[in-house]
Image (tube, rainbow, N blue to C red; front, side, top):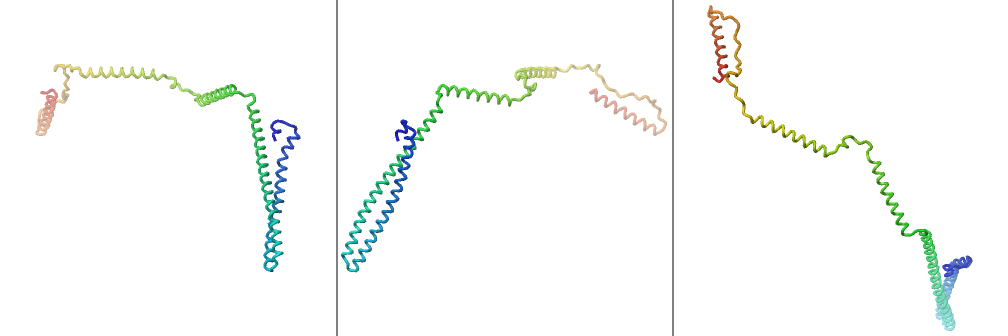
Length: 243
């Protein structure tokens, strides 16, 4: 077995590989054969017990005793056979366990060789350099994705500086406040009194029609109505003048 790990010819390796399997197969076959022999001996023991009882019932003690002697011989052979079967089963278990360990070691050696082949030419510095390159490429990919997702058209409003807009709004607010202050100052100034002689008074129009002398009573009524209108107009004029 150890020649497999420390080298050896191909023939010896092949023989070492096949030998455990052959031994396991032969041991199992022999154990099965011994189990059949065990069953046969147990059957003979049971038959001798039956014969002994039969001879004893018939009064033939000599034959009954001979049957018991044969029974003892079969029991002795059965005991030896059971011990042999136990030894073979223990040996079979040991060989199977050793073969399993051998296959396990072979698998572990194959795994070690595979890992060695994978790590061949690699060291921690190369791994770190490779990982740095991977990180740089990932960052570059993110920047490229952001650049692709950025809108192609930029409106003119996007180029206007917000600080300039704030300054212009402050200037407009100051101008508006100055205009409001000037308006309040004009409102607070006292009104200039206009002389009564210069005040314009709206007077009623003088009628152009010629006033005729009353002739009849109907003419008198007409004259009275015209006088009433004149008086009413005069009163309205006095009211407007504050008289």
